[in-house]
Image (cartoon, rainbow over all chains, first blue to last red; front, top):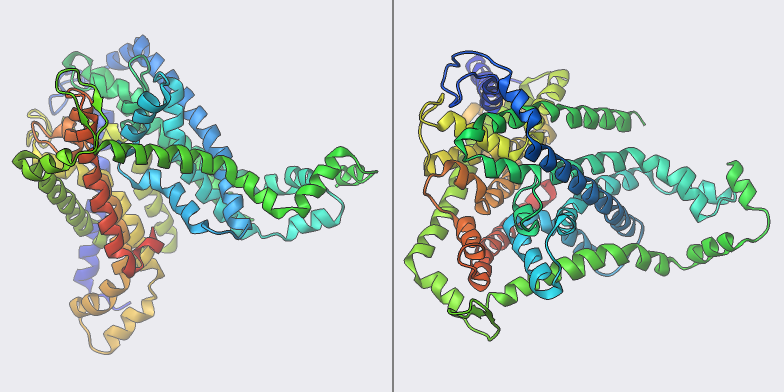
Length: 265
Length: 289
């Protein structure tokens, strides 16, 4: 391509600078989790492991983490079931209102979280009379997580076609056997990728959670948000933030592995 | 395979159920659609409808109870009281500023990724851009709070500028990825052809690159605009005393306990987004999401 040399240099610099902008704040958080100065004075006056120890000992933090894991798992299971069913219906059948179904699945993530949050909390509160708790959080999260599973399964079904399932039926397998031995194994990595995304989405969510969780239930993001403005807790919040950055590498690694595996098929 | 052969021995109940489903595709379809439609069609859409309906109700000023009689009062207040008009306009302005900043940063980055980097480097660059999306939203907003604080690296203090910078940072990957995908689809031969026909860099950009990547740019802007418009957490973390639409909704749900007014305010970002989506539909941006 005939791009002038200055233009190439300029674009390269823009790319490096842009990536710098993306990563410097994250690096600052990780570095500050070892900053001996409680108010994060810059540059750090010394390094310490003290904050990591006090984070480890915080029982409120541990409870919040466990609540988040439960909510994430619950939402992921519901999203897996609903997303897979919807994807099969849309990809394998023709019916009136098919486009509306796809739109309906995208809607909860396309609308601002606060709209979904107050709509659901209003329904729980005034229409159904259900007390807010972990279950209502799971319902709220599952609503916007369906789309991740749906997209992944839909893409997989589109690629895999009907050939192998028809062959299985021709060889005498009934619907259930075909699903167990042919369809499901071919979808496994798509389900894993979709489920992983759903879990990550739920684990990080704060707005819908705020409106559907009630007083007793604290997920990790809610805990972080509550402690963000308490000067005493700042170092511990910082440790949690740093830990979350480091841990976020795991799903990326898994997602890369999964997409690599899918592309070799 | 052995299981299939085993099941073929004689008609069993399971075999009959399976055959029934095989023959009746409409039954299969309705079963598949039942749960997703009950959840999203009935429960979720129903909740949205109930919320919109309650925007036309009011609350009793003494007891705080809902008064379920039709009134335009909430929308009337929303349009006539200065504070709300200012906040709504400010929110749109902030969302637009965030979108433009992200566009200015993302386009050169995406261009360098798609057209200058080797295929191997491209894969790594995509991972590098995707990675921060997995890091928690709160953590990133918090990182900016620390950097912006008076003793921090940047030390700008909190306010509207801080909010715009933080939101632009949060949504940047959502702008880079669609533009990168759009540029990658654009054949390099087009750039060479433009050069052969005598076009310099700027002219090539204006007449070839920009028109072809415009749908991708709009796709990215849907994310940055919509996400900024509904946000109230980032404003609370780095915004100081500034307020956006989301804060008004939040405060009316919590402290003021005025669900009807909150619902009316919440329709503002929804209507703006629907208008935005309708306006950009013709560009083909929705297929780029």
